[in-house]
Length: 128
Image 1 (cartoon, rainbow, N blue to C red):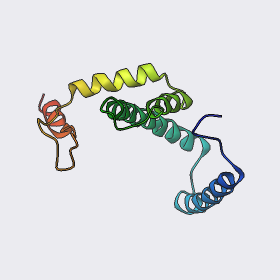
Image 2 (cartoon, one colour):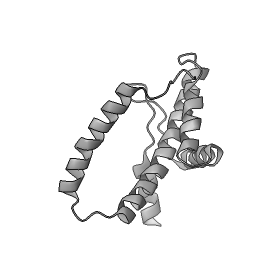
Image 3 (cartoon, one colour):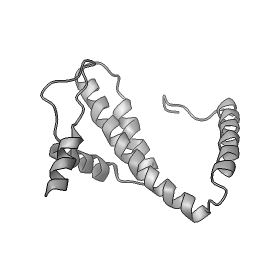
């Protein structure tokens, strides 16, 4: 067994309880939903999740390099991307290419975080 463990009976019970609450809300909120529509939306969200996991891979690798995170987090991100049905290499290198095209500030914000300024990139694309 890996250090991330597996679902135990309590986890499954909690997950089912949460799913039931979500199901009730979804039935009321989206009465005309179809399996096809939900499946298409799931596909979109999984693609976004894979890209977010690529970000997590970047940041956990950086934290690991800087000495502040144990081994295992980047590997978990890699496996999660694969678990979503995507190639970790393709997703991560695709995200790297996207990040290289983005506008980044010279200095971090007050929390020490560098956030890309995509407004500048979007503005330039809209003006072309």
